[in-house]
Image 1 (tube, rainbow, N blue to C red):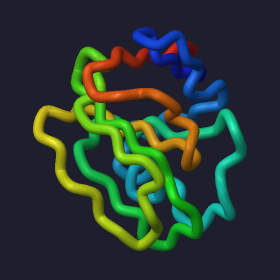
Image 2 (image 1 turned 180 degrees about the vertical axis):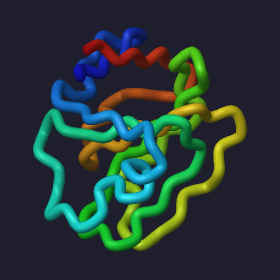
Image 3 (image 1 turned 90 degrees about the vertical axis):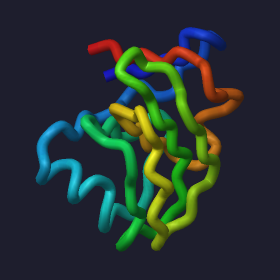
Image 4 (image 1 turned 90 degrees about the horizontal axis):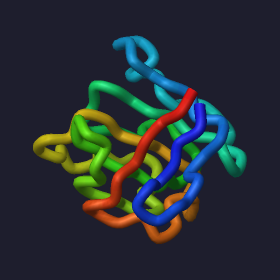
Length: 112
């Protein structure tokens, strides 16, 4: 799917996969060598992530049920646990640097 930041007119990714089952959310991006530009993972429901068994940093966007960015973490390193973000319904994981100017309050939408 394609994910856009509607507030800033940015395409955050054009090859975003959805992880909406327990198994898909648990495995996430573990053991992958990296993410190519345009790739990412939309985890839902989700309010906290880990980067255990990962080899690369991620940009993390924590989104509420309407797609508003509640928290944006740039270049979140491997082998960490993110803070739990109250009110978050989804987390978008992107390659480090891909979130660009995305900030809390921005509206993010996924398109098939």
